[in-house]
Amino acid sequence: MHRYRSHTCAALRTADVGSAVRLSGWVHRVRDHGGLLFIDLRDHYGLTQIVADPESPAFKTAETLRSEWVIRVDGEVKARSAETVNAKLDTGEIEVFAREIEVLSAAKELPLPVFGEPDYPEDVRLKYRFLDLRRDSLHKNIVRRTQIIAAMRRRMTESGFSEFSTPILTASSPEGARDFLVPSRIHQGTFYALPQAPQQYKQLIMMSGFDRYFQIAPCFRDEDPRADRLPGEFYQLDLEMSFVTQEDVFQTMEPVIRGIFEDFAEGKPVTQSFPRIPYAEAIRKYGSDKPDLRNPIQMQAVTPHFAGSGFKVFANMIAADPEVEVWAIPAKTGGSRAFCDRMNAWAQQQGQPGLGYIFWREENGALGGAGPLAKNIGEERTEAVRTQLGLEAGDACFFVAGKPSAFYRFAGEARTRVGEELNLVDRERFALAWIVDFPFFEWDEDNKKVDFAHNPFSMPQGGLEALQTQEPLSLKAFQYDIVCNGFEIASGGIRNQQPETMVKAFELAGYSRQDVEERFGGLYRAFQYGAPPHGGMAAGVDRIVMLLCGAKNLREITMFPMNQQAYDLLMNAPSAAMPEQLKELGLRVALPAKKAE
Image 1 (cartoon, rainbow, N blue to C red):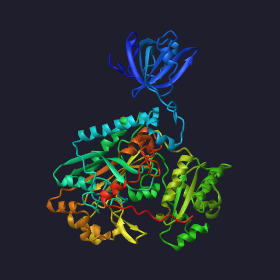
Image 2 (cartoon, rainbow, N blue to C red):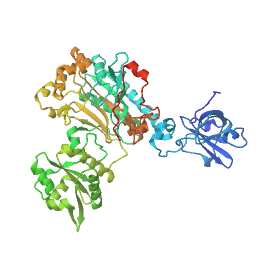
Image 3 (cartoon, helix red, strand yellow):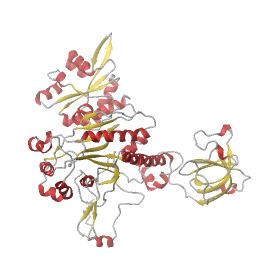
Image 4 (spheres, rainbow, N blue to C red):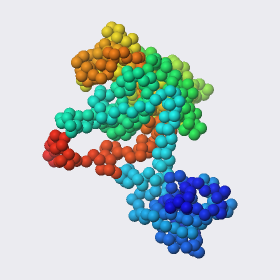
């Protein structure tokens, strides 16, 4: 028999009754039932119940066992009685009567429990991550992550893609975040950068004559912590295709992404044909370029109903500035003063002056609007609002006014809040969509200049001619995202492979031809020697796994994450370098002076 095990802790069934077996694993818990000891033995695969009675030579050792000790058990498989069968366990119809127990490794008193799923301070969980990962839910999430990534690789290979690895030590690139810099020992005073994304390399792969590339790529961005991205690093399903249009990318990748969700959705419905929503429409309807389409609320402009009305706050704003609009956020079933007042209080907590509302009720057989706005704009306008939005008795509507560019984010947050508060969101499905026609440029208010809105290597719609003749902020890009349940899970575009078009685009963003040649020399040179039309995208592995696991936090699907301060509590990183290391690199640390107390 093998030194440690003949079976795993998930393998034994009633067919094994009467067999002599050997198992090894962790003591999950020990229960004393009147002198009879029951030991739940756990390994990576599952759980088996071990029984030690006072007549067994293993009993004396069994009495010493504590949680998370690692043991080897030799014993005989027996069938459980009908009343003791545990249907929740794969091994729930059998148990192993121990003849011999060997302690392979004892465990100190645990700093956090492994049995059960109690909430525990994050700093303790991350410092003792190796214990945290033994917990059932987290362990299953990590296993599911590997299965999802394997499914991605399989589906990409079946779609004709080849997996290539791209360099980790590379040059700085304007991907929109700070680079992690790596000093060079050989070329002192110079630095490599860890890739924010394999963007330039994957385009160069297309320049090199390979047709369809993908990889599960690690990406590094020195960003401040965000709720939907871990600090430091993340992984993406990166891909690129030659001789394709935007439609080709959609037709190729939609089945891949849909199939991955269907594989792991556990019966939840998955969108079959992804709607294609222009960016401008997404902003106006949902207040976000990553809308949660499980929420049925769609905002509408209702400016004419308030223009010249008795509600002077809105009416005066509309009269003073033609760019001012009033947007309505319909709230089916929200027609109570108590709910409307709660939403108004929430808006004030967000730093807003308030949130105007109307709610409709039926009195004496007549349907009418209520609330201060209804009184100010009058019955006719109130009825026109209700008719436009398709609202009934028991419904409400909230209003925001101003320049949409200034308020759309708040309006989107209010839409989300209303949907959640009224339980309108269908949480039992995965709602996916393409967001298309992104702006090519945006206005950088801090630096008072035009800058790239998304990927600087995307092709502007209309090409070079559009760059030369159209107002920059009116240009749209062949840029697209996939969104799911309120998260951006993929982003991509058709690339700009024409040298002069590339130079012109960067010139409008404040870069010179020399800047382009110096900073993106490899790509720029490649475009001079026969560049195929190409495009692709990158899907966020971490976010997809989080959605499919039903997790609320990316740390729940990541094996060894940092905390929100970008610190690795397990490995104590980052840490100070040794003086010898700095000397080899030709570096000296100059920390900012501490402020006086």
